[in-house]
Length: 328
Image (cartoon, rainbow, N blue to C red; front, side):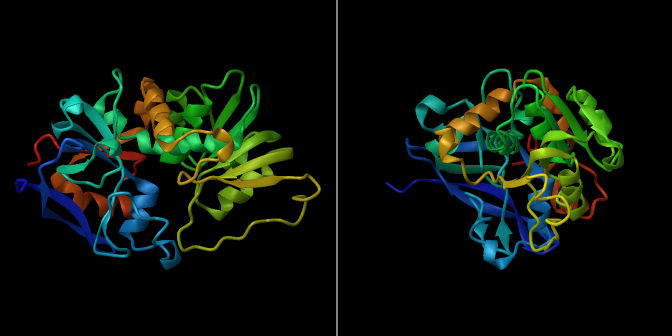
């Protein structure tokens, strides 16, 4: 018997710098699938604006592909990975559950049941869109191997950097400082119960520095802040830009380390699956401090106007939430 199809709508990048909402059709799910009605999606300002501007290097097209992306870089492409909705059909045990999925901006969709993770009680649906970014933060902390009592700095107070700082703030005995050139980020640091400083006034002799500013100056400053034998964990993704790293001067004499971290891979020593990592991230989001990372809301219908403003910086944001209550 042929399964029914339903009408939905999705945001597509039609060409670099411009997008539109297009009609989509989805097939009614089997019992091994779920149909989700979207409640909220989130825009990760760093990665998604690089995609929106057409700045994904060709040699990274395969690596940067989102799990449920349609189309190909640079455009037209349907891209995104922070989606929270309610299951309306499909796997009987999930009907009525609020779930997180790595799905683009679309009013409704059908995916395998294993592609969704139930949002735990105590995590509001809008806050749950942060799960993908907090998952990145969890992975970064796993890669960084912080110790109780460490002096830790996070350079770059964007969505990823602030998420890392929020996770690290829960480690007993640590001194965590968020460093950013934007003085407006101080209020976010206060909400997370951590310190804040401009790069010129940041604390030095740090055991660990997480770099997430996506700037050459930020990486250079991160190295300057380290104590001897300290480590910088590099979280920034620079897209198609080349940057200079100061490996002269005292880099070798002070035995400094730069370690990469990327959410696409879990260190084998962790012995954790991707599903387990996402569950950890969602559990952390029970903490209301993470609400500080949500800096704005707009309706789904406004996405074609919102993304250009996020990309050019005229709409400052960490995580910008898209609301679907009125979308059909």
